[in-house]
Image (cartoon, rainbow, N blue to C red; front, side, top):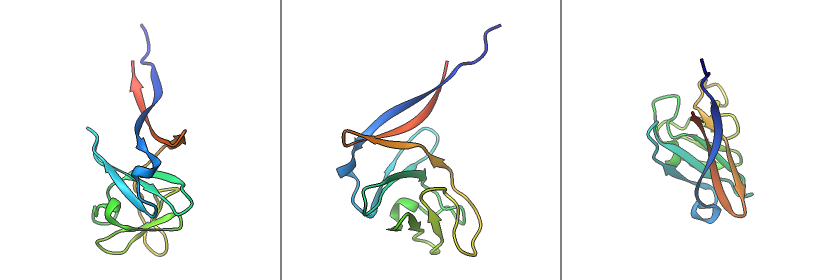
Amino acid sequence: MDGLRVEKMFVDIGMVEDIPRLGARSIRTPDGDIAVFRTAGDDVYALRDKCPHKGGPLSQGIVHGTSVTCPLHAWVISLQTGEALGLDSGCTKRFEVKVENGRVLLAYWKAE
């Protein structure tokens, strides 16, 4: 009996310049929306577009440093880990993302 093989793939979601500095863009997927953020230093991060508190759209939040503040209740979420910062607790899923030749590539797992 053959086992299930899972392979990591990357999908091109656009140019870095398509994401505003200190902003985000939301990517719709069959598994839910993903927010892709760009910092002032052009680092790119990807999180589930849902605050762990009440599900607010993180892509509409304020990006500062390597964090985003949820637009609903001002929870601050680390772009590096997805963890709530300060006295709040909770986590949103983080996705692997990389930039190659100015293109943003988002990781996904393909089962074969």
